[in-house]
Length: 603
Image (cartoon, rainbow, N blue to C red; front, top):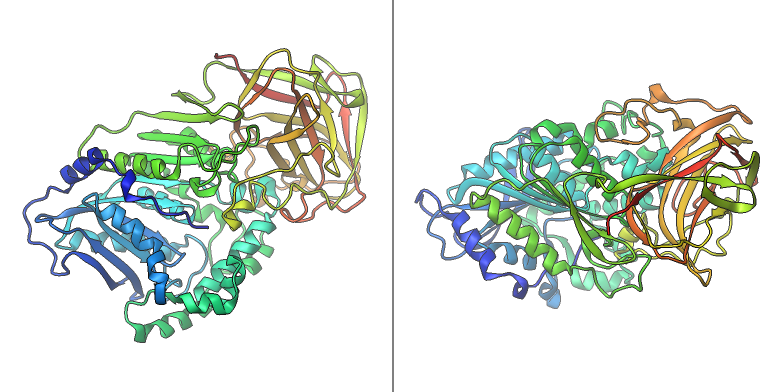
């Protein structure tokens, strides 16, 4: 779940010059800590001691800006023997320090070498601790009072929350592959529990929090003895305190157990605790809007692209959004419509150079960035830039689901198609939701013979067709059971019949009601996933379902066909809602089921 570190050779001299401009201060005396790395305890408002590492640059005679990382994955690792050569946290900090920045990395309470207990991801105490850390940094003699954030995944959310805090020290942030709406775009897409990812992530983080070397070795594909010979655990501030800190972690929320009791976005994770509504970064949109932001996501990484576009739609501040074809973290190429590249394009090192340049420019007093959205098109690798989403050149194309598995322009003949649900239907273990757990590229097998699908397919396309935006499936549907999950896939069928995944959407019937979910979030359906908006379902009831697919930009080549597939399960990823053998019946006809494609006419 962590990325390989960028190499110093990729850092440009121009970036170093910009960062040095940003480091100019008021001539205050340098920190008594001196250059290099220091492990210290900070004290939160309630007295909890938080473990931090501070790296200070050498040969700096004036206060400097600070790059802040707030993490729950250990701010630093205590290596044994030759393991120190692989200290990736130190490699990354050295890169930042080489740019004239101080670096502060903090273990969230209840994690790493910090004391206290965690009541859940991005909880209220953790958010308050972020503000306390900012105050601490500003008070240090080596600080010029300017703080920037750069975070990936969980740390992307903590970075977004820093920007949303309204703290005057925060000058710019880079959020990479974060979860703008952790309920709808990670834990419960379409209201269906993403048990494959969440159970694995919960077990992994629980093992980290108790420093369980043998459990962590299983996640890393090593033996317990191998891991114990290399890693002692989280880097301590004082070795005599580490066991006491780990003992307090025993009171951390059992997230897997808590999620088993969650159905709605406003359900509390624990009695007296918080809901997904409370922990989402968008809760501070107004404050965050003033902070220049570079936001990186991927069409193929969970719901990160949907989250990036939601942030774009709901926040008016200076923002650059970049959506690639990356795996989680930006390491691997994951374009399903091209032969896989060995690494992401652009490479991870280049991505970090661009991120640091963005931060350095803002610290140096450059004008706030213009609102701009850059995105790659799957199947061609071309990057485009727009200031509106979807681009002005996009128009909707409506395709009808018709008899014989046809998908075409115009109206369909009246009729119906029935899927007998196969509870073993699956998209595999390397899909967009699970690859992040393994740190692997997103890969889908040929879906031509995938089990448990009901499909509709177009004739071969006369010309290349670029789909850019949010495809929307509208189904007139009956289910034979009192609740069901509907999974819809957009696919590319080449002239040899090979069928490639493009994007997907899902919806639990309980959450089918639409309404005003707030600006930017679930923009197409207006779905809230809150308890008050739940709708019971009676078996056999005919309902109109609106299923927005995850956004994409993808070129379907001339001669290829577009396929829409329906399933009732994704075994191994999503919780089983629809019983094996239940039926989902789709009605066709002039006012029947349709696929709306956002087609881009630009060259």
